Image (cartoon, rainbow, N blue to C red):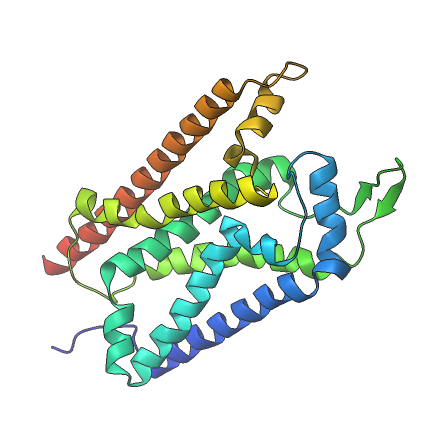
Length: 262
């Protein structure tokens, strides 16, 4: 009996197209920064959501953007592997690589559904207040709102679903494999601290001990000790979320394989 698989040339072409569109969207983030994203970044800084808006390149420090880029590059390489490159086929079927990318983009989607969508509407603001207290338009944000939905909703949902397709029938040690998935998020956290200490740009409030302190203890003088404790607590909490989600992905993956073998 012929093995059922989604790995057809048509499916590979769809992955290739999706990856290319995703990279073009990321290029939009960088090259339209001053014209489109600058007003939004000003809004984030003025409302203390971010601490610095130094450049369009720094915008790539956002975990959302990095996780999306990994997905896009992976899908392009995956497609060429299906088209005939044995090296790329082997590389893109590495379970730790696939699992790491899936976990990162799944977390992006989880944050969107649990935080951005319920509390922020999941879209960019149409207006912002400048330094003089004057309400102004944030500019041509309609396309950026579409991009935001693509990066936070469409890509996370579709690529997480990709994890459960019959691409691999290899069972995974749930806990042991998940620990390998954590290498990237741990490195991301450390690099954000190093770069943030250098130029003052922290992509998220929970990466900045002082910012978390100011949010929780408004009006009080900053305590570096408390700030460090808050930062450490955020690190442990985030690592726990990643670990739990990774174990869940692996467990469901193994369950699908067990069900198939019965």
